[in-house]
Length: 178
Image 1 (cartoon, helix red, strand yellow):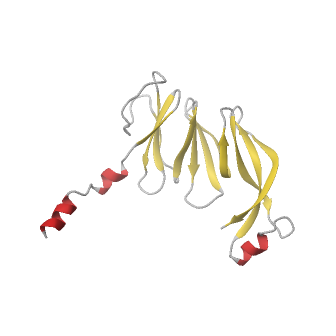
Image 2 (cartoon, helix red, strand yellow):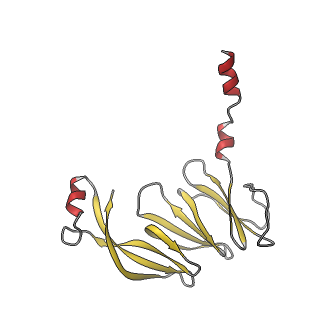
Image 3 (cartoon, rainbow, N blue to C red):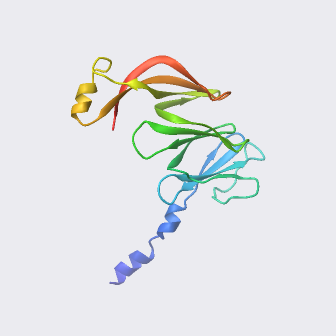
């Protein structure tokens, strides 16, 4: 009985385990994330005084910080300059891509995407659904239907960070859908 009580006594409380902060450093900002109560993360964007500045990784909103409370299973993906890139969802793709302009403190883009993402300094490549898959345009469509899945045609796109407009590319693919 003593060993059982001792091992229970040394376990960390659940709240402490879910409050763990993770830091993501960019040139001008540090983004601190912590798990939300259900799915997703709460985030704080904090401007750095110097690019090489190192401070403790603590989730604690301070004056001047920009806090983004989890809306619907939002997760940190990347930080490019003042652009915070988030992934939303808990299901397989397609998922939702969200971009926040930290300087303006506003959401500048939200739309569906499928990986892989290739992020550059001036924009990013990813895949978006461009049509429905049929047996004629997708060799795997019939097999996927037999397995209870759907199918979609996706096109690789470019999202430029200057204007947040989607530019369709030429590459396409067929992908299964739940």
